[in-house]
Each structure stands twice: as C-alpha cells, then as structure tokens.
Image 1: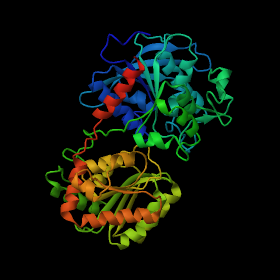
Image 2: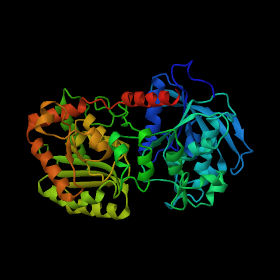
Image 3: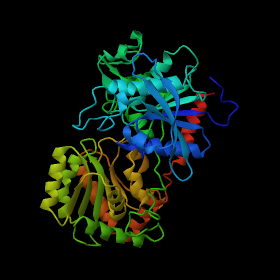
Image 4: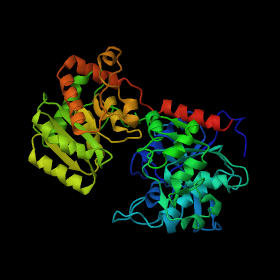
Length: 494
C-alpha cells in the first residue's frame, strides 16, 4: 500500500449502505453525508462506496464506469461507477457506486421488499458491498486510487475487515463504526462458503455467532479499530443488555474502542435560516419562537394557547424509542394541563393507539403518522420542550436539534442522550451548562417526574430562557467529531 507519510492526511474509503439525500432509512444516512462532508472540508481525501439502488443511480447524473467485476466468484457481474455528490455548499465528495442490477435494481426499500420483509438475498447484496470495499482497500484494487483506511459502517459493511484479514497482499487499515448494535446482519452458516469466506473463519474466533454467520461480529472481530457514536454508548455495549450478545467480545476489545458523538448539520438545522419555520429566530430574539408555537398548534389542530406548555416528539414508533411510555403518560400530560404533538411511524399497534389518544383529547394531543421533513422542523421549533424516552440511544440527533432550537429536551439518561443533555440542577444552572432534563429509571413514573420538573422550570420565565440559551450556544457541529475521526485515521496509519 502507498505510504500516507508524504500526505497531510490519510486517504479514506467510507463504505456505507445509505447516504442522504440519495437513500436513507435512519440516522446512518445522515451521518454518511455529514461526516464525509466535514472531513472533506478538513482537506481529507475521502471517497464513498455504496450500492447502486435505483434512487442512487437516479440521483447521480454524471457518472462514469471505472472498473468491472465480471470474474468475482460467488457474486454476479458488477460495474464500479464514479461520480460526485454535492453534500453541502462547499463539499463535493467523490462517490463510487456498485452497479449490479441483479442485486440492487428492484422495487422496494433498501433492506426490505414492498411487503416489509427482508430481501432474501441480503447476505449477497451486502456481501458484495463488503467484498468490493475490501478489494478497493487492497493491492488487488482495479483502480489507481488506494485508501490508507477503510471506514466501515454497521453490519452491511461488516465483512470488509474479514475479507481484508484473509487477503495475503497489502491492505488498508480498517475502522468499524457501530451505529446501532441491535442490527447485526445474522445469516445461515450456508452463506459462509457462498460469500467466499474461508471455512476457518466460521468459528467463535471469527464470523460465527451462536451458530450463524454475523456480519457485525465479523467487523467487530477483524477491524483494526472500533468506534461508536457516543462515549457513553461505547461503555454500555460492553455489558448486557445493550451488548446484544456481543458484550464479551466488545469488552475484550475495549482498548480498541472509541466513542465519538455525532454532530448535526447546522446548515439544514438552523433556526435563524430554517425555511420550514413560521418565523426565524436566534438566542437573542427568543420571543420570535412563539410564532412557531402558534403555527404548530394551528397546523396540528390544537387549541391555540401561548401559555400552555407544548411538548413535541419526532420519532420512530418502537419499543426502543419508548413510544409505549408516551402512551402511558399522554393522558396524564393532557390533564396537567399541557399539550403533546407527535410525528412518527413504526409499530402498527402503537400507531393505532396513539391515534386513538389524539381522538380522545383533540385539544391537547395531536398525532401525525408518517414522515414529514417540514413538520419535523416546525415541531422542533414550535414545541416548548422535546420528549425522548428511548430505552437505549446510541447517539440520537433530535435531542441536539431541539437544544439548538431552544427547545429543552426531557430524555432518558442513556447513550448519546446522557452525553449531550446536561440535567438542570442548581450547579449546572449556575455554570450555564444546564440544557434539559434527564430521568434515570425507565418507568412511566420517572418519565412523568422529568416532565413535571420541566413544567415547573417552564413557568419560571427567567430560568427557562437561560436553559434555552445554554442549549442554543452549544457546539453540535460536525467539526469536532470529524477531527476526532481524523485522529483515529492518523493513529491507524502510523
């Protein structure tokens, strides 16, 4: 491999299954856009590798073929396309796309078919992504540009470090980032041979996980370094239950794990410039925020009342996100009095029960099922307080958005929520670090107690304004996170 010693920064190949705005199912898509953009602005030579789904090919108009993979055993023919993706005003990042119609050109989602079932060939689909990631990061690459580090993301690229491990030639160092350990990419052991992995890899000291092949375990086991998306989550996953069966391996590799908090895109999420708001505002003119509260109440059909505390949440409706806890406390919230606005989708039963609650309390509770980017911005700005009762949260973005918008959050003290929200106490109020409310027990009573603390603070207008300004003045940009990743890259190439 070429030495990076003559260059200011190492070259990085960023392997990901999704990137905003081309394709996105969750936070990974946002991170895969924002982190490379921030690194690009630091003058890092970073290039993305992703599958050629229909939306990706449609979104990248100017692309050219740079290599063909016609003779790869175990996989169908594929073409490597090169293009550029405009991440923001100043970051135009090179992208490699795997064009393989047999695996990626189909109707449906990235991971699921139109009926909501996993694609039956997901092992091959993301095995190919991992395999080409490894090829491009080794002396077997068909193109001239060779990275110094291959940065893998979640299970879909987890086999890349395994393929590199078994490559006998020169190869890049590997970094495995864990965005959510609950999704592991576990498949039948029959897939080991079909994916071209040696039989020796299928052991507890390799890709085997309770009798199956695990893409994620492969990445954790073989990667040179591991990162998670918050320092607290890096510790939590080394123990049950948040290790999801991998806590032993993660504890063994604790010396090679770094926790780096995600950032937010402050160009898109900026209350001073946000086009989705009824009225733009800053920490210096917070009175303008009330126009967004009125607009939100009117949009959602709630009683327009500037004095009543309005709580907002934007979330997937799942057990992980604590949506069942919202169900439990919502009637109590309505009786306080207070109002609740919810935007999200997910578990059908939760959707139905939350919709029924809104019908039972039409002036106090409003629920919108689905995804609406403009409404998510208006909720973040228009709510007085944001609710995130997640059972676990590797990083979380909405609690950072809400603080940036002067909307203090009430959060469960877990993962990135505990890392980014400072609980209101006399000491944190005095040192101007307080930015929200943490509850520690995952119970409806503890959650409700956190909400009541928030309401008490809300009625003290001077205190509340201090809390709002503290959150708005925090630096949640990607610059600090990108610099931390750059330090890891540099360490791996020394």
